[in-house]
Structures are given as structure tokens and as C-alpha cells.
Amino acid sequence: MIDLSIIIVAFNNFKEIHSLLTSLQKAFSGTALEVEVVVYDNSTSSGDMREMVLSFGKSNFLTYLISEDGNCGFASAANRAACMANGVLLLFLNADVSFSAEKLVDFVHKIKDFKEDAVIAPLLCSEDNLVLSASGGAFHYRFSRIFTKLFRSHSYFFKKNPDYALEECDFIEVDWVAGTCLTVKNELFKLAGGFSSSYFMYFEDVDFCSRLSKKGVKSYLYKGFRLLHKGNSSKRKKWDYKVSRNLFLERAGPIWCRLLDLVERFFVFCSSSKILSDN
Image (cartoon, rainbow, N blue to C red; front, side):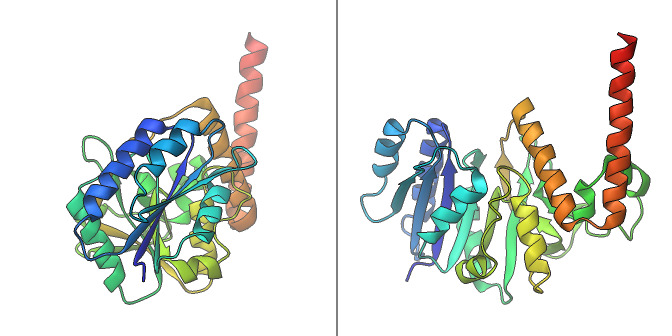
């Protein structure tokens, strides 16, 4: 029986994938855990990537899949990879991360021993070891800048955004956790229908946790494992973020959050129009 299936979506990031696979092989070799890795390649030209990835698969450690319809987005690629996964647990892992091999193995054992069905992720940190807000939190936090400025200090709305480093318990309950390193039981992932393919990039994790929360499944951050996330920013990614954010807001956001979002967009539009008229 396979204990863990690690799912990685690749997209023109040869060096990062090679580094990650090397780290994973080192982490789990010699442990009692039965682990498989499924790499789904969204790249447009994948010859070198395929050869490199398959070089790690000499002992059924790895499965390599390639998208036949170009870049289908993270959610769709992750779902397709999950269909091929045989592990009791699924771990969705970004390539742009680094971690302690010992801490990762300990994290997997903690998840295996966790009593309830849940979605669990580690804390994401910057290079100076500061915990990133993108680790997880309350659904409201990502809705509106206006809402955040008005109510961030209000304990009712932001009771699930504590200083995670100061929490006494190892598992911190939140509304959502990041798909950067997300664990869930295979059967639970399939029961929920996987990630929504409506999201090309971003918010598929928030949407996933939201849908499961309606079924009584909780999400937790595990304080005992910190993952360095080296993610970068670009205009394209910022645009994808806004599109996915608006989609999630339309699907799951409370009416008052939607109204605040419309007010925010109106002020942004007015500000942009004024700048253009002044020029």
C-alpha cells in the first residue's frame, strides 16, 4: 500500500523540478513510508523535462504525465495527476519551495496519525523566516482591501488570523490553507470533486477548502513544519490572482463582501479615470 502520493505540476521550470525531486528522493529514501511522486507537465516543450524526470523513476518512485492540450492551468493539471495517484494521502507541492528533509518526513507522519478528516498544510515562510499571510487564514481576509482596512482589528471577523508563531497548539484551525503544500486524504479529495478547473491559477485552494468546510471538513495549519516559499510576482500573475479572486467572490462570498468589492472597484475606476483626464 502506498502511504503518500506527492503531486507536482511543472511548467517550464526544469531546474526547480530537478532540485525538488532530488530533495524528495533524499528525504524519503530509507524511511518506512511508501511514497510515489506524480509529475504533471504543463510545459509547451517537454523533451528535456521528461528525460530528467524519468531518471528519478528507476524504482517506481515516480510517474510522469504530459498535458496533451497545452497549459491547462494548475487546478486541472493537479486533478489529472490525482487521478493517477494511488496513495492514501495526497500532498500537492509547488516546485518553488525548499524544506528540511527530516521535518517533511515528520510532517507526513503527523498527518498520517491525525484523527479527523481534514485539509492540512505547513506554515509558509520567507527567506528571513517570517510566516507569510499566504499560508492560510480566514476567507474574509482576501475579499476586499476596504474591508481589511475597516475591520482587520475586529476580533469577530479576523479571529482566525492569529500570529501563528505564538499559537500554543500544533494544529491551528483556519478557513483555508495554501495549495503550495497541501495534504488531504485521496478519498476525500475525490469525494469533493478535486480542485475546481474554473480557476486557472490561484484560489483553487481557497475554493476547495470552502467546499469541504460546508461538508464539515476543517482546515489546519501545522505549526511544526515551515516551508520556504520562493514564489515570484509578475503582472501576469497579479492579473490571474484578480480574476480568480473575483470568481471566488462571486461563487462563495457573502453579499456584503460582494458589495464592498463593487465599491472598491468603483473607487479604483474613478481614480484611474481622474489620472487619465489629468494627463
